[in-house]
Length: 245
Image 1: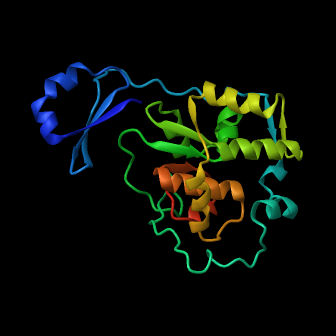
Image 2: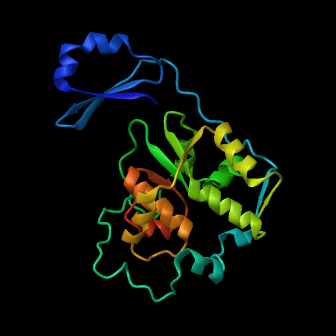
Image 3: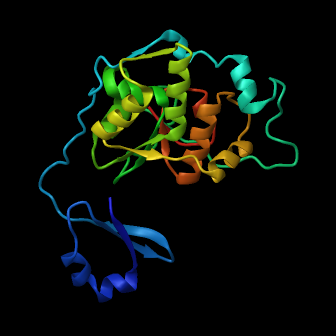
């Protein structure tokens, strides 16, 4: 969604100019001291078209073993360390964000309803459920995913996880992993998030609540990019990152 940031003074001086230039999908964010105050977008008397989920029926079979920890030899290749790892390397800080978990009930703290578009980073299994098992999605998560005004993202780490688990027999696909991931992303309008150096190094800032290397990358990416992770995984919810289910 194209966006533009302007100051209050710019909004007062050239308001009509900015309004005339608005097109469907555009938005203008009015800021004071670089902090967003308000958002201007084209008026529409129609509800936004909701995403149609479940467009990968029959392409994937999720085995129970998909959720098992990776074999120790694979974990060693990722991390090269054992279970006795302390919470972060000595002398290094850990990320100090306040964890916020949002659900439609249960024990999690329910925060105020979302207003405006939100950025949602999908857990790998959530991406698979979007493709062909939508009834397994949490009610709030499904509502936000179907709302086409929200921005959906899939990490390259999830593509990596799908490729690895397919190769070791934990995930059955009716087409090559590349075709499945790229095809379902396009059909469900999900953008790709690459893994860059800052993401990789951000993993070292995380406490060792969770050993799964794919999830740890997702957490680092979501914190850095101010995204909410859509996940049912309570271990991810232990981290200082906003989650939705």
